[in-house]
Image (tube, rainbow, N blue to C red; front, side, top):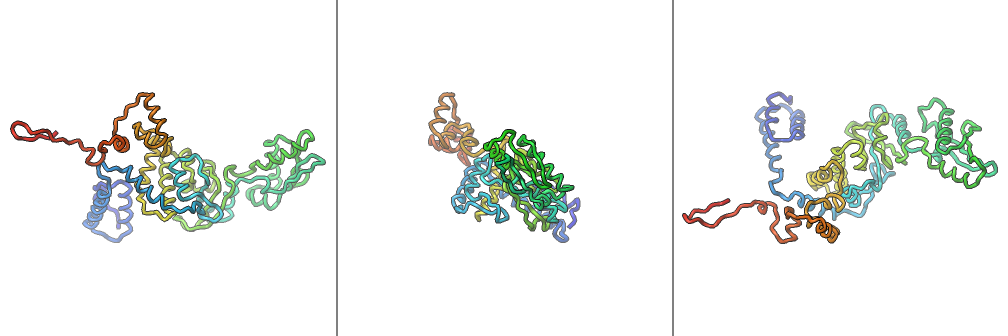
Length: 401
C-alpha cells in the first residue's frame, strides 16, 4: 500500500524505535490496500509486542545473559573447524571461536575475509580475477623456478611466461613486468640484477660467498612482488547473494584497510573476522556489530540459534561501551569492576584483596556477587526496593517511609 501522511502519522505515534518503524513501513508497502483502521490495529499490535518484550526494571539482565549464552555453550561439539563458504578455507568455529571473541584476542587463530565485488567485477570471472591478483600475495616461487649456480656465484630465476600474463593481466607487455620484478629484487636485497633473457633474472652477492648466496635465496623467497603480504591465498566462488548471483572472494589472512581501497571491491559489504581490525578501520560501532554477528553466526553454526540476540547485544555493549574493545576477563571487564569482592571472586583472589588493602579501597556492596559473599540480600528485583514500615504511632495510625 502507499505510505500516506495519515498512515505515517499512525505509525510514528507509537513507542517503536526507528528501525522497527521502518520495518513496519516496509511490510505495509508489500501488502495490498489496507484501511486506516487496519493500519492502526497493526501499529498498536506491534507496539504491544514490543512493550511486552522490554526488560522489567531491576531485572538481572547480566545474569540472565550469562546463563543464556553459557548453557548452550556447553552443548557445542568438538568439531571446531568449519569451511567458510568454500571447502579450501577453514576457520575456527565452535567454543574456541566464542572464547576468541569474548577474550577479544588481537589476532584470530584463522584470520579470513569475505570480499564482495561491485559492477562488472562481480559479474565477470576475468575481472574478478584482476582483484584476486591485487589481493593475493605473489612470491617468487609462484612466478618461476629458482636455481643457484655455485661456480659463477649466481642466483637465477626462470620466470614462467603464462604465470606472468595471468597475474599481471593489465600490464602493457611482458618486458615491463620483468623489469618491475628485477627492480623489486634490487631494492629489497640491495644487489645488481641482470636479465640475460626476456624471462630470466640473475643476481649474486657482492663478494663470492656460498653462505651469502644461500642467504640471498632465502630472502628472495620472502619478497612479495604483488598483492598484500598478510593474505596468502584467495578463493573465488560464484554464489547467490542479496544482490543476485555474483562472484565472492574468500581469503586466508586479512588486511581490511588495504582491501577496502582496491578498485572493484564493494566496501559496504566486505568484512573480516578480526574485530580489532574492524575497529581500527571502521570505528567502535562497526566493531560492536561485528561482535554481535560473529557470536550469533558461531552459535547458529552449532545449531544453537535459539539464543536471543539481545543477550549477545548486551555482551557487545559491555565490551565496547568505553570506546575500545575490552575482553570479558580479569584483564578487561571483570578485572575493572569497582567492587573489590567482585574482582576477587572471579580470578587471582589473593592478589585482588592484597592490592585493595594496600590502596585502602572501600567496597560499597552494590552488586550481586559481593552481597552473596557477605550474606546480604542482593539488590535486584524486590531486593532493591527500600521500603520500611515504622512502629505504630500513639494515635493508632501507621506510616511508611
